[in-house]
Image (cartoon, rainbow, N blue to C red; front, side):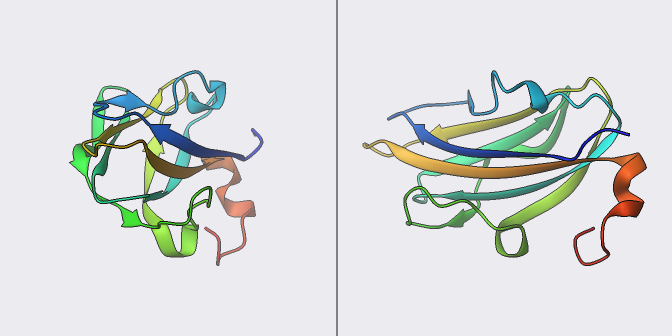
Length: 128
């Protein structure tokens, strides 16, 4: 049984960036056990798009939109900004690719909650 992990990300996406992996370098992006991930996302403007990949599988295609929240530095909420729950096997990488077609730096925000499948029964029903 592993510990539940939450990865919070507030990333400035460069002007004209394409396919920038905002989870690169975060060790927890590769779970050590088969897990469920819950993903909540927001962006500063409509010019910021994302794609979610798990191992070599596309979970959400690149170029997808999420909620716009113009409050700089805020984190997305699972109850309002959740884009879905996904399965990930032990050792598979979670990659979140972001692009920015705006002529200015734009913010992208994510919260990824990783729960080992063996721990799902321990979570209160309203959070599972």
